[in-house]
Structure formats: structure tokens, C-alpha cells
Image (tube, rainbow over all chains, first blue to last red):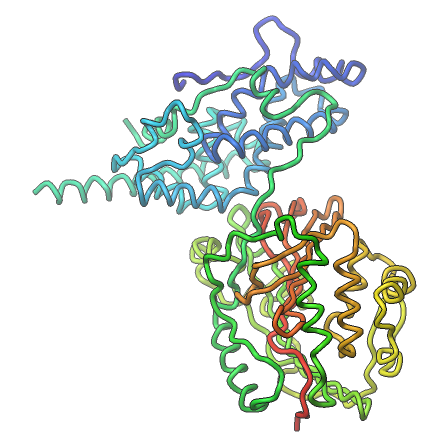
Length: 201
Length: 363
């Protein structure tokens, strides 16, 4: 797990999400516990993709939507994470082009617009390493579907099964998209490495 | 270390905020009111510059310049918008009446220099195409011409062409991944199921017919159009209430419908005054239309629930007082469109490439 990240689930021994959601139908304030458990990890994932300000919007809308639709939550699913992330994934897709522009900007300049949103990390904004720029270039070229799968696994730390649930696609499609996306990222890194070798000759 | 490990390290320094901080930043609490989304700039797009449409339009404009030499209606060449215009001036503190005053005056002084009202309009309708998981937007484009002789009370028209264009330059990569197609079939939302639309007859004049002008639930005759009042209060009564058709979603919609009609100059000035006076309309100043022409006008929001919400923009030429375009930009996309349409995308537009009075009549 990446430093600073948490995988949000109900704390061991505590009430499952499904039960909290069910009880929140009578006591709406209880839904705050679902926010407390899941918002931080979800926000961090979205912020890595879109930046902090858009992540605020996406998380706010995700939990408003979830709260409004909680009466339809399937009580047989104790963990609310796939449900919440599915709502968020649809919202993130609305930003596909601006997300792509940010990867392109990082690939072109070495300056990451997403990191500019974190003032105390100003010194880290410029990351002109060939690794970051080629990763960004590869992400910019991925289709929406391939990028979703790759980043849900790499940044969201979702399992393949969870990724399938979040995106509403078969497990086999998750595997094939991930395979394709990884191959493209690998090719981009390899091309950069080759180019760097040639430059040092 | 494999590519996934490298990827995990990218932006790994984005911190995870505490729930209390996030609740403050997002304004979220159970059952609380929804957070107003941040205002997003509406991007002036360049659809005609992205395909063969640009060439077709340029050729058509050239032909039209030959057809209508000096003294004919104003024509434009569709081309890239000035990038500096991306930041719109929403009118600042100026009122709609102040911003609209010059265009109202231009409309009032636009005396007809011929009996024929001519319009050449490009209708662009964005549709989602491409494979599931990698859809992108393309415009189905229709170019139409209409002539209305107000003295002989006769009208003719023709469909000029059907074409397509990428909705935005950002869609180009998805289009290339799709194999750079130039025709799509089975497209939801397309009349023929295809983009470009098929089945039309192009270049052939239809008519002559008696002109009529739909307004709400009625069809106005030439005479009724001529006799519309120029007084804004009277016009407002007619347009905003008397002629408001079923399904009108905003007070400005019936006003919008009369914009391309051959209105007498003082009536057109009155219509613009009505527009400027509608509560809640926003002023647009120093903006450009989809083809890059400088415009002033008004905007208003139309919320269609699950079908999404959009900003409708009526853009006018401050120099001539005539319409330039009507555009519908996404505020929130419909759920079915959310994987290819984003806030700011212009999903539909009517671009008046040329409109005005002339003496010319098509052969």
C-alpha cells in the first residue's frame, strides 16, 4: 500500500456498512459514518486523477447521490465501497478530457498541474524525470475504459473483482483492459529508456 | 519494479485528508443541501475547423459571395476562434440592458435593402459514437438555405449538405483509436441512425410555398409577422405568455424562436429588448460563437432533470444586430451522455453563417 493511503473498510468488529446505511433510513445522521469510513480514500484517488478542487466536487456529489439513493442500497453487500466508487467513477468520467489535458501538460513540461493544488508540496511540483513524463504520456493516450481499470487497480487499490463491480463490466473485461493498458504503459517506459540510452552514447 | 509499481509512485504524495477536513471542504453532511458546483468555463469550440466541413463551408461562402456581391447579406468564413477569447466576459457589472443597447440600436437601424430574407444555417447536433468505454463526440452537421420573399409572399429552401465534425479537438485521439472513421451507423439520436445523416436530397430547391413562421402553438403569416408590435411590453406579453408553446422550458425560448425570422427592424429591436429584460438571463459580452465570431448576447439555464441541464446562449452580431448563433452547452450531461460529454461542450448549435435582406432570389 502506498504511504499515506488507507483502504477504507468498516473497522474490524464494527457494524457493516450495509447495516449503517439501513439504520440511516431512520436516523439520517448515521450516514455520516459512511462518509467518515470512505470519503478519505475516495477523495485521494479522485484527487490523484483530477486534482484537489475537482475531487472536492466529485466527493461531495458522490455522497449526496449516495445519501439520496440509500434506500435502494442492496443490504446483501456489507461493504459500501464498490457502490460509492461506482457513483464516483461515473462522475470522474465527466472530466475525461480535462484529466487528459493534465497528463499531457505533465508529459510536455514536467510540471504536474495536479500537484500544484497542494501548496505545501510546491517543491515537488516539478518532476521532470523521464519516468513521470512518459507515464503521463501513456495515461493521456489510454481510452477511458482502459484508464479507469488501470487507475482503479493502481491508485484505487481495488481488486479485479471490485473493479468489475465499480465499472459494471465482466471480470474478463477487467483483465483484458488491464493487460492492454499495462502493455501500453510498459511500451511508453521502454521507449523512454531506449531514447535515454541513445542520448548518453 | 514493473510498470504498475512505477505508476503507483506517480502522484503518490497526494495526501489523504481527514474526514472532518473533507466534510468542511466539500460542505457535505447527511441530508445537507447540495454543494453548488464551481463555475466552469464554456469552451468556444471549433467544430467546422476539424473536418472536411471547413472546406465545404469555405467553398459555400465563396459561392455565396459570388451569388450575393456587395450589398447582399453579411457573410462570414467559419474558422478557428481567437484563442484569446476563451475567457469570456460575462458582462461584468453591466446590466443586460446596457450590454444589449448597441445591438438593439443596430437592429433598429438595419433597414431592409431588398424584399428577400435569406438565411444559411448550419445545424450541429453532437452524438456519442465509438466503442463502449472509449466513446467520443461527433457533430452531425446539416447546412440549409432558405429564401423568403416578403413582397411576393413566397419561400423556397434547400438542404445544402450533411457532414460531420469531431465535437472537440480532445476527441481526436479516441477517434484515431477507433480507426479514424468518417461514417458511423447505429447511432442513437441520429434520425437515420447514421452520421453523417443519410437519406436527404441535397442541392435541390423545394417550393415555392407560402411562408409561415411557427411561434409557440401558432403559425404566423407574413402579414402577422409584419404587424408584430415593436413595443417591448406588448411583444413580451405575446412572446412570453400568449405564444408560449407546450414544453417551453424557459421564458426566453419563445423569444429565441423568432430570432431568424424576417422581422421588421423596429420589431427585432423590440425582441432584443424583451430578451434583455427576462429575469435571470445572464449577459454575454466579448464572447465568440462556435465559428469564432465576436458576439454579445444572453444566456440562461435549462434543467431537464435526468436528461441533464444546459446553458442556452443567444449570440448576436453587435455590428449588424442580426443573429450569429444559438448554442446549447452542457452544464451537467445526461447520464447516458456522461462518458463522452463534459460541462462546457456545445451539444447543439444553429450557426447563422449568413442572414439578412437581399434582392437576390435563387434560380
